[in-house]
Image 1 (cartoon, rainbow, N blue to C red):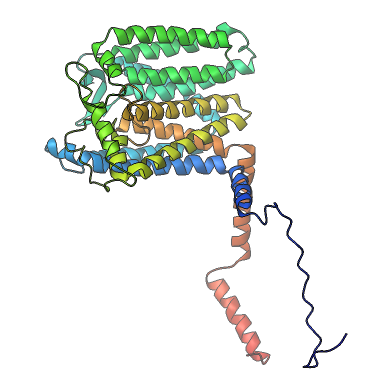
Image 2 (image 1 turned 90 degrees about the horizontal axis):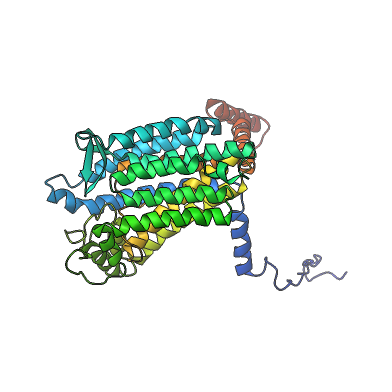
Length: 450
């Protein structure tokens, strides 16, 4: 081989292989899609989506409650942060419930089903006792506890139906009784109708709709035949139509679907129309946090049922789409947990919680957008209301516990913990590590190294 001018042998350069067209390594779009799909299919994806999504929704909800409730508090001669402080206290208690639920074993969840159901039924019946029950906005569904603090037992009825219904169906599936329609319906449907009756005694049809959605979700997960499912749905729709037709207030709410201007008479549509005004004035990025105009007395229930409208006005389309994306991620993760488990109780409970949160979010957001009648239900984890926040955060803790209990997720968590332990064990720290470095330095100096 001939030498170069400097007398050194020439440098041998590696021959580059031509890139294969269409491979993920050369196409950035395909590479991004492949990485996203791999990250989406990881064992802990559902766990992180539920934990991160629920916490982000709760934190953003606290910010929007503070922004949307200031004017209402001042109009009631209260401090501007009054409603925010109450919601923050409820969020702290809910965080403790979420942590406790996420650490409970499945057996303990099943053991709590009957006590929670009995407590919910007792409190919901106590609401109808004169002198104990409190009426708010025409619905008597509240119990006064201490001072300004009130409790809405019907919110805990949702959690009770999910846990008790999941335990009931799981035990019947273990005994192979779900193939018979009478075992599928009894006693699940009668108990659900009892809860619905107690709720409707107070006039709260919005909560009754959510409870009905949970019932149908459990029946669908149990594999109810189509004719049975359609029969129960037809019966519920018939009863609901009678309740709506006999109530002028509910008929007026249906008349406000798609309204763009306030009317007169019973169906004034003031709240629905001003919710649309708030969303329309937000634009792409909103008018700025705290700069809402509709919350200055124009939009009723700005910090509760219509907080999504204030979010659209202050944070714009970007803010509302972010909230929708968080709820979509939470719903997907719940469906994934329910679909990948082999435990029937986990499947029914995860499916029931996912149905609960998703249906309530759809009904609330649909009412704000003018696509559905105003049902008077809060946006889960987002709207003001401690009675709604506490059971929802406990239910979210159930989903986190179920996501962590998947075999693949449990193996991934154990590997991560063992890997972290090996790193800590193999890497000394503190005075011992400093002394080791000093001994190495002194040994180097004695051997003549610099």
